[in-house]
Image (cartoon, rainbow, N blue to C red):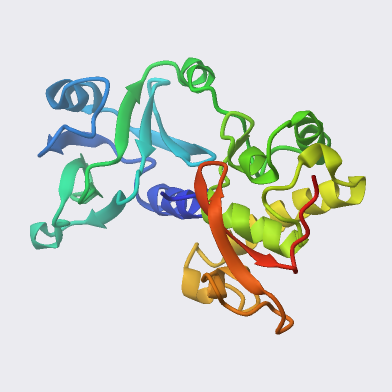
Length: 263
């Protein structure tokens, strides 16, 4: 599932090709991923509309329309965007395409059909209905710490809770815990104040560094846990081993005794 940095990369791509272009038509090949209306209605509502920009909140990307409405692009596991002009460049698993007035198309490719596309008349009502917490790169330290102080579960469960904090997923949560040297199953309420602030700082730093690298994993720093997050791998100091277990309902990796369990 794409996490905040990956969706931020999609947003940059969308912003580079869609805003300011009138949609002549929407070609819908398979409307399974269009969840709140038929493919025909989706195409009709978007015809002659113009994208004016975008908004990202966590893992959700919304395209602004000139009538105040929005299109949600939630990518699932395999969703992708492709901007092209020649039909031979059409993505193999394109489910629909916005056809713009400049002769180009923005196709939505999704081999496994796990994406979720919605036409939204009221963005704020939709966000409240999820509900979806503040974006992990927008929330300030005081707000973050207040939420963390109230959390009664495990640290990783808090980081993954999209109702509280939007955008952090499984891989980045493990990276944050590793760099903080705190076990992901630790009790947030038992953490020292300095550790809580460190988690906030690392969250922002890790997400921003991933964004700078356009969420291209091969460009991530060599000392990130991401690079050797394999069960049984030796710890960073040559001691200990990487462990794996189900924590907060997700497959989780950590390094013992590098990361301390605080309960």
